[in-house]
Amino acid sequence: MYLYNSATHKKEEFKTHTPGHVEMYTCGPTVYHFAHIGNLRSYIMEDVLEKYLRYAGYDVNRVMNITDVGHLVSDADEGEDKMLKGARREHKTVMEIAQFYTDAFFSDCEKLHIKRPDVVQPATGCIPEYIRIIEGLMEKGYAYFAGGNVYFDSSKLDRYYIFNDHDEEDLAVGVREGVEEDTNKRNKNDFVLWFTKSKFEDQALKWDSPWGVGYPGWHIECSGISLKYNGEYLDLHCGGVDNAFPHHTNEIAQSESYIGHPWCTHWFHVHHLNTASGKMSKSKGEFLTVSLLEEKGYDPMAYRFFCLQSHYRKALVFSWENLDNAYGAYKKLIARIAALKPEDGAVDEAVVKAHHDKFVQQVGNDLNTSMAVTALYDALKEKTNDATRLAILADHDAVLSLGLLEHAAAKRAEDAKAKTAETADGFTVTGEGDAAIDALVLQRLEAKKARDFATADRIRDELKAQGVEVTDIKGGAIWKRVTA
Ligand SMILES: [Zn+2]
Picture 1 (spheres, helix red, strand yellow):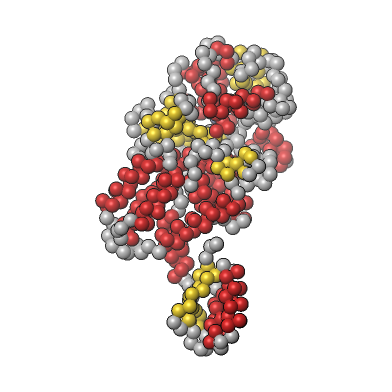
Picture 2: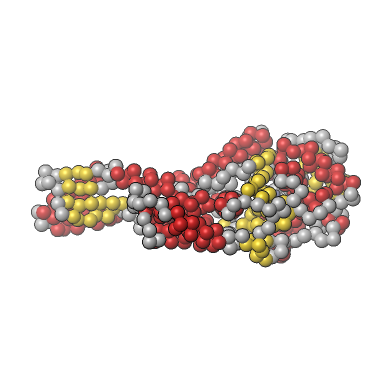
């Protein structure tokens, strides 16, 4: 596989420390609120990446943290704890908030067919690990104690790594409006490893440490959790592009200083989901969640399909119109798959393999998911029998997880339920099992028979307005619902 590496700024052949095995880490959610669909875009693309690696023959160990402590309002360690803010907003305890939004996150993931990582670790479960790393950093002179907190000393590094793609925008974090400068810091890029009570009296969760009772900084949790479950050689680290700086930069600084050798070889960053007015965020405009999409009548698969149509390294613009287009295309695709007959012929394994190999190659070019979607249409167009076409689609869906065969089977069952209605005149109407529509279609047939074309046309327009398309056949009519 060839994958763009944000650490080297180029597309590279993906290599792992242990051949055939991938140690993969993903920055998980901060569970103080629902995830918006912009956050979920990252998890969808990372899910496709993980499934692709497995599909291409790798064995994968994927680890994810759940941030339930230490993530302050600003990524640069300033302001109050997001968890505390959520607890106050909802008059609950921090642990109740964490549990509720962790469950909500995984429920969204399930709806979007995002697989649960092999290891999911809440940050509060690894405090001794963070303390051990911070102690190690203190011993080696990479950290210092000032004003009640332990800081990482960024000046001790030969190179404090900045992901160049984003540096202009990201470096502005330190000078964000309303952010007070922390006078304990020796250097602008220093960051907190451990906070003590001297700074935040009302922090709900605190632990004892060699530096006093307190709690860990946000960045240390990912290093601690990854070193614990992935080991010292990480092949692939994933996250949204806004995590690149300062979060990932700081992860690299503390991990490599602690272990004393290079840590992660490959960095995968998914770009933003934007709205017409800019980057999507929780604080601005409509708060778009999976539940909101469902309330508005969208299958969550419409959103997954929408995300797969574009490349993860390009900002994606969300609008209801764009989502409608994706949903329309998805439903048409399902209808085409539903029209295939599973009993048509025997699966031609050679044809399936040819498509599989081509898919490995195409998608392996920097996770080209739009090409992967195109491959589904290629499968439908393949000159073979339906059983083989279905086998190819099932093969590709192991990576894409669009529920293609399940949705097509459901549609087939629904179509089979379509009922037939008759009039006294002997007309038969075949539709999708809606008596009110059947009645209108029959009325139209009666009107036509009586040569009352004005009424017949009026009814046809009325049906069309309801999204129903009527086709006259000998002795009756067939109707179906169509998407615009
Ligand atoms: Zn992280």
